[in-house]
Structures are given as C-alpha cells and as structure tokens.
Image 1 (cartoon, rainbow, N blue to C red):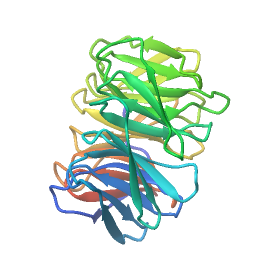
Image 2 (cartoon, rainbow, N blue to C red):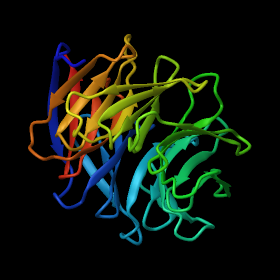
Image 3 (cartoon, helix red, strand yellow):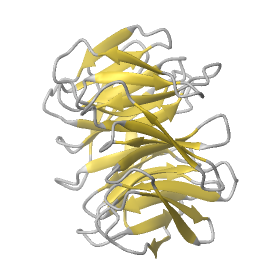
Image 4 (tube, rainbow, N blue to C red):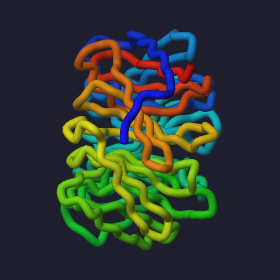
Length: 305
C-alpha cells in the first residue's frame, strides 16, 4: 500500500560534473557525508551545510562503489569494483588501498562488523572478504557459483553475523564470524536483490531491483515481500532511519524517487526535483535528514517536516 502522508522537503547540492557519478554514500565520523564518485575515481565529502570537496584515487579507474565508516574513528573504507581493491580514506583526506588476493574479485558492498574488521562482498569471485584495519585479508567462499554477492550489512543487535544480498542467486545470505554461510532463497523469481540494511525492528530489509519490491527477513529466516506501486521503479539501495516508527528509506533508481517503508509495509514515495537524476546510495545523515547520491552530479537531502 502506498500513500503520501509524511511531508518531506528536498534540497539538492551540486557536488560534481554530471559524468562523475555520485554512487555510494554514508555518514562519516566527522559529521559530514562521504560519497564515492564511481566514474571519476574520487571520494567526496559534503557538510550538512552544503560545502563539498573531493579527493582523487590513484588510479582513477578503480570504480569506487560503496563506502562505510571504519572502526578506527577517523576513517572510511570503500570498495573499488574495477580496481579489485579495498580503499581507506581518513577524514583529513589521506588515501591508501589494499589489493585483494583473488584476481578479478569485484568488491562491491562493505560494512563494519562487530569484530572490529570490515566485511565486503566479492561479486566477481563468489566470496565474502574480511579485512582488518592493518590490511590483513581473509576470504570465505560462498556455497553458490555466479551469485554476484552485492551489498552487505551488520546484523541487528544480538546477531554477530553479516547479511548480504546475492543478486544473481536470488537469495539473501548470512555469514558468521568463522565464515559459515547460510542461504535464504527468495520467494519471487528474478527478484535480484541489491541493497540491504538492518532495520530498527530487529529484521533485515532489502530491495529487489528486478521485481520492484521491498523485502524483509528476520534473523531466523522468515521472509516477507512488499510490492511497490510501480514495479518498474528499480529500487537500488536502502537504509534505516532513527525514527520512532523504525522506517527504512530506499531509492527508486528507475523512477527518480525516494521511498519510505514502515515495518507494517506502509509505503510512501517522493519525487526528486531534478528529472532523471538516477538516485543510488542513501544514508541517514548526522543532521537527522536522509541523504541520497544522484548519479547526475548531485547529493539530495530529504528532511521530514
């Protein structure tokens, strides 16, 4: 079910040229938003007041994709999908990177685990990786081939596993600290899950880009799916918001919208002001707003009124 009942204001900030490709975004430990510029090979920083800068990667062809705060308190970690590396940037802009042992690994999703390490997906190698702040990498094979493991997130409170989407295997996976993997197939064929987040209701929420649905899975594996009003909307990323109703927010890449879903499945959708802006990553910001990366060179802030 869909209805517009929560008023939202949207402001867009230009952060790059229209060919640089703002893609992944997260709230940094310094009170700013940090994002990847996938086509330009840069990492960007935007303050809630709208001041932006970016830092080059070497080489610029690595395809920085998703980004997350690190455990050190002054760093952010990101994947380089085409460069097959894991990168790290300090809040002062110092960058270094770590090559992966497996060729053509295609790292994409990344999240901090409760063990003080970063966990990431290897979309091209059917593996989940783990890297310590010192750069030590361990890789764990998945029990499926051609799964295209995509986004990853730490589990809800009390669950020490990492949860991830398998876009081509049409499944959600969970990996324990020792590398044991559980696979949960999705009910809808061709759902092609991408983004995933731990919700405020104790479940994991994910988007089905192929089916135009939002999914929910409990730690014990119970799955619910909520169809979007526009099944061709191509939902891409999802994040939890710190609100009393434990809502999650998601991007609709194919429909130029951002949506909101509550644990009971109520969906609200909001058009973005710039046409064909291609919203990708989304995160809850330090200011209580939602921030989304628009591939056409902007970052949008959505504030609930």
